[in-house]
Image 1 (spheres, helix red, strand yellow):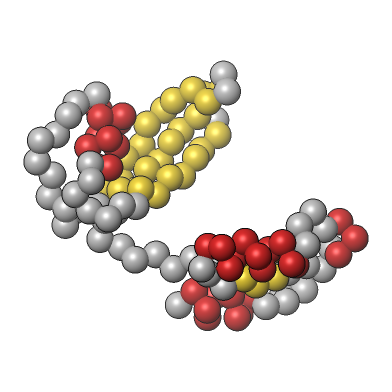
Image 2: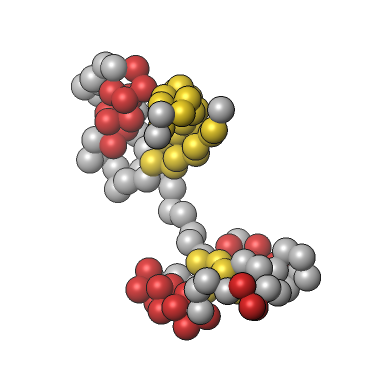
Length: 116
């Protein structure tokens, strides 16, 4: 069974938590405490396969740092996205871009330092 993880982010008070609860439980909630972070788990069918969807509803209280990462930089000959394409997308998203390699430990420490 495949597992999918979803993090629900919003600016607060726009009804995303109500959508999530409706999807998971089939009920509509009129009032929701925005200070609560909830975790939901629901079995669904995706592309005709049974799957588990895990949803973390942050209730709009989180500011999430984003870094675009191109991994496996050690496999240059098998590259599917150029460094320039990655950099351009990061600029569009307004976030840093790093190329890494778990195998050769290229920029791994820098990645996790940057996210903090």
